Length: 75
Image (cartoon, rainbow, N blue to C red):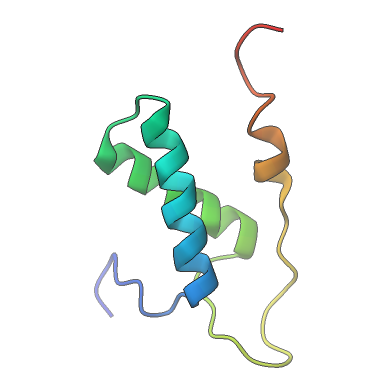
């Protein structure tokens, strides 16, 4: 499998990455950088590419999502 191949990701992970990338683009990040950051976030939360199925993998951590609106900026 070549680098950057997304076939090991579930449909849910792909949708998450698209949604996250849209958020970055709205905040002025370039399309390429937004896509890169989005996949990094998905990897951090879900532990990388996973095939769905019973008893496979670990629970997802949504710490990055919770941090999102609070990191940086003025209060």
